[in-house]
Length: 118
View (spheres, rainbow, N blue to C red):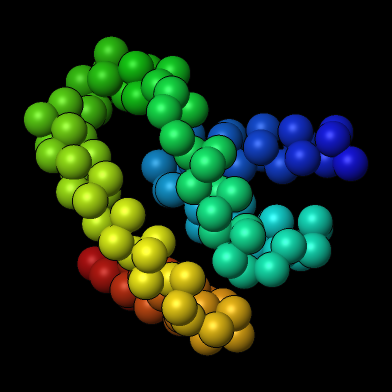
């Protein structure tokens, strides 16, 4: 089981580094499907995996090539710090089925918008 978890982490890291997506978009479904976690536990585990400094090396590479804005990244991080806390508090009061549906609809909406944008 440990090797599968490491493999999922490696694959999610590779895809996240290539396309710049948040690992949670891939981690959460993988944890639910492959490890049988419930939605709450998968989301919490995903957040734990994404804590600093997980993305540090990927960020450094983008920054070295001039493709990262530190000021914006720090401001996003500050907003995420506060918003993530209150979002996590609120998520604990949402039934698992609805939390999974909200997650899925979020992916579909964002994916649809990205697919059809010019």
